[in-house]
Length: 130
Ligand SMILES: [Zn+2]
Image 1 (cartoon, rainbow, N blue to C red):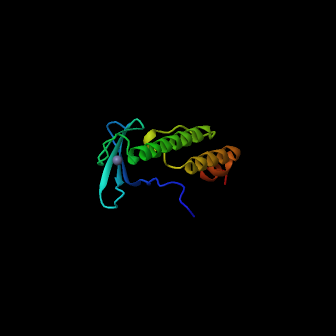
Image 2: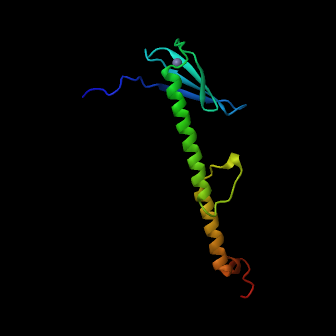
């Protein structure tokens, strides 16, 4: 039951991504004393600074936040790749990416149904043969 490392684990309170430049990201982290908060900033996935008192250039916030951000970027890239590999998914506007593919599937399916039974819906609307 011995600890393998004595490394502190950074506690992330918030992640702020700058709208003006998405490469710029700041993490609000909890200090290891549990009271203070520090701001660790990244640019393009690499730590550029931290507001904690460590002045040696590499505090554990910077290391771990960097790792978190890289993991996040990897996941996002992977998700994008997986989405792109789904066939028949129309490319939609970036801002509307989230209406789930389920809705798209339903549209595609009903379109297919309409094609396979072209008279089912139409004949009811235009039943002039009575
Ligand atoms: Zn720090």
